[in-house]
Length: 328
Image (cartoon, rainbow, N blue to C red; front, side):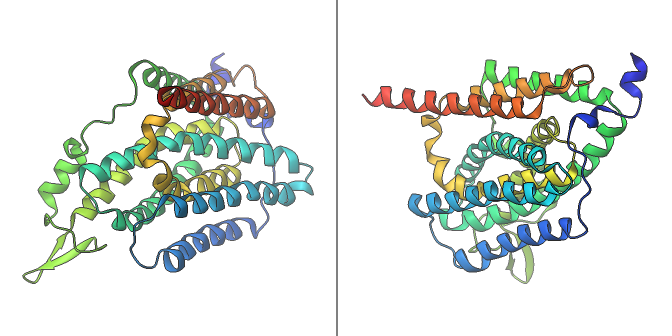
């Protein structure tokens, strides 16, 4: 038993084992960076309030791009006989990350409301938040895969943690608390010279010749800290369906890229998705169970994909039905 837990992992044999082409990582990074730049420099060059129609169109584009990359994954590894399996792992990871990221949207809404951030400045702040999230996820994924591959017992540790988190959300809800009371914010206010007023979309401004942080920098710090907290859940969850760093990062990146548009679409609709916290908790519990028993039994990724889609569908449909019954 101890040898199974502490030996180098052989559990990776249950997932795709592919050779990434030399152009694979550069292609992925260029696509992600290019998408960010096009969004920032072309579609959102000027600060403006993003209405629901614009957010819906952008969300559809981002989701379409994420789903389309499934075909790219399948094509990349078809020559190695792992095209379909790789695509299933990518799609499973994408759906897990996308569903768990819905909580980010509602936390962002709370943060912006607390700091009274004008709506026209929120997109630029989220741009830098997303950029930081991508960098953090890249580091977490590279380290996470390497560690889990070396030490199998961590599968059990992460699995139990995910189950605990899921049960906690299911039984006590998802109360995020007051952002201004975070230890990070207390340290920020103590050590970073700041002003109380906004200066457009600037993170810093000058007052009497001195460089001072605007409230937007404080908001960005809180957003980045909250993403680190969410990554502790989401990265191990995606690692439950894939061990290939390229596939895991790609699924995370494309899910995260569309979060800004999703925020402007869903931020004011939290009360309509009454069962989403329960849906997220059930996903975490399932993924935790899958990861905990992986040392002894591997649940095939296609089955996991079916369970993920079923849980998401039931949660969304139940929420819509509940919302309509209230209005009837």
